[in-house]
Image (cartoon, rainbow, N blue to C red; front, top):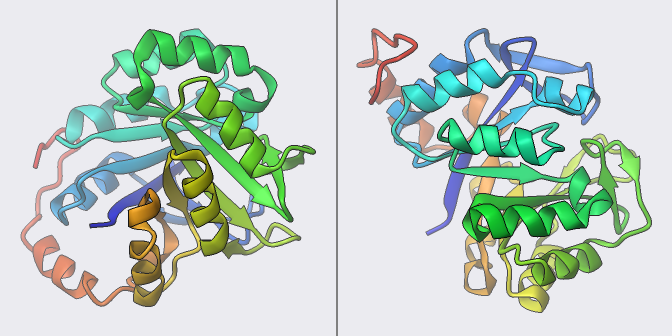
Length: 254
């Protein structure tokens, strides 16, 4: 069964989603990311995907306290990314109870650090984000082009011990998330690495198409705006559960 990661992107201490892939063009869905995590857990989320958008902009973790409170408030694994560039930052985030960290830019610019991280914390704790546009990898939150292809980067990461890639693809202008089913299948088949699809799925049919790739190694998907805007029929049932969660304190465990 395809695992769904609800996405919580933190900017200026709020839960947002970037519109059209443009930094500074965020849509705010909640002023409290901690309560958003509790709400997703109450709606039966099995895990969460958290991105420090401010961290991406500054090149270092910014919302560490909020992330710590999220970890303390729910009883499911949380994976975290956004601006994590040093061994010390990643070690600190893992020690606070984060299940897995996602790194992107350092995979391209400091592959030796990836090898060190995998050896120190294990392959399950380190995932590599691959942002692609027009067949090339982009870094710095998908804003800067490199000449590396997604497949070459994935193969390089496999050699360093990485066992999971988080793959996101956007249109040429960077404004539209794409569901690149053929690329996902190729990456999974040629690398034998587990793949998480990040974005691009906007309908139940898209989820079924991704489900068909599970046998190749595409086993999960990260959903943001499509969940917040209730685009999936199953969310009608989730709303019924929400009515019972009348006291969502910031440290309540569900």
